[in-house]
Image (cartoon, rainbow, N blue to C red; front, side, top):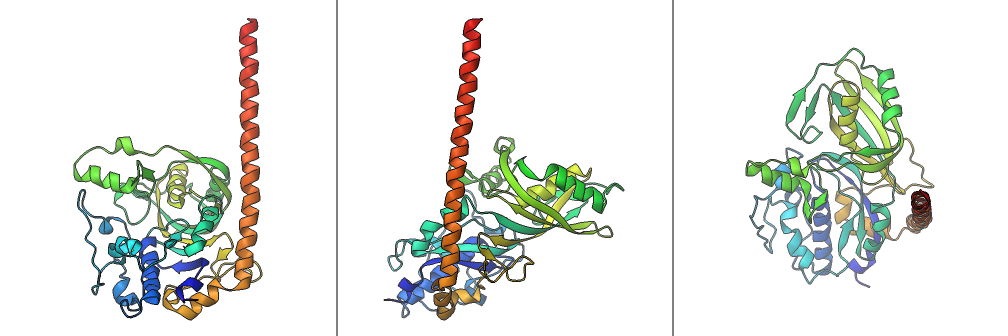
Length: 359
C-alpha cells in the first residue's frame, strides 16, 4: 500500500489568520503530490509556498474581471498557493477523489477547518449541511464596514449610547439572536449567484462603477442554538460573544445586527471557530478527550507520520462515525417534519377551498 493511499478519511486543521481555506487545501495537495512523485515534487515549504497576506481580506487575491489565471508546473518562491490549485487539481498524479473542505473560513478567521481526504470527501456533506458549529467572535461598537468586519472599509460611524451596557447586550442577544431567526448574509460573501461568488460579482460591479443593489442577498432562516456574552469592555467598546449555530450562519452579520439593535453600529474584529461536529480546539472550555477530536497544525499537514497517525486513529474514526450516524437521524427527522408541515398546509388549503365552495 502506497503512502498516499493510507491517508483516507476526515481530518481537521487549526487554520491560522491570513490564509484562505483554499490556500490550506492546496498546501496539503502539494504534499500529497510529493508522496506520489517525490522525485518531481519536493515537500512544500510553509515559508515560501504558503505566503500569509498582510491584509486578511479577499480583495488582494482576486484577479481582474475577465482576466485568466496562469498556471505553472513549478512553484516559484513567494508564489501564492491558490495560483496553482487548478494545475494540481487536474494533474494525473493525484487520485480522483482528491481533497475537499467542509465549509470555508475567511482569511480573518482561525480555528477548525474540516478536510476530507480521498474517500473522506464523501463524508463532508454531513458537515457541510448539518453540523453545529461553535464560534468565539470579537466585535467593536461605534462603526460599521461594508464587509461587516475589520477587513472592509468603514461606511458609518456612530456615537456609543449610554444604554450600551453589559446587561443590555445580554438581554439583546437573548431577545433577538436566539432560536430560529432570519438573517441577511453580508454582501461580501462566498454565496453563489449563478455559479459565481457574490463577493466577486460585487467587486466586478464596483470596478465598472455599476450599482450593486440587485445583488443584495435575501434573508434566510438560520438557527442559533446558544449565544452568550463572554466579555465586554466599556473602555474600548469591544465585546466577545460565543455562538453555537447551524451551517450557513454568518457571525459577522450577527455582530453587525447586534450593533443596530443596540442603537449604534458594530463590526467584527476577530473570529475563531472552536468546534465543528466532533472536532474542537483543545484549549476550548468544552473540550473533552473522550468525545472530542483535537486539531492538526498547518505544519502537521506536511508530516506524514502525524497525518498517518491521525487518519488511522481508531478512536477518531469511531467518533466521526458516531457523529455521522447521529446526523443521519437528525436529517431523517427533519425530512419527516417537513413532510408533516407540507401535509398540514395541504389540509388547510383543502379546507379553505371547501369553505369557498360552500359559499
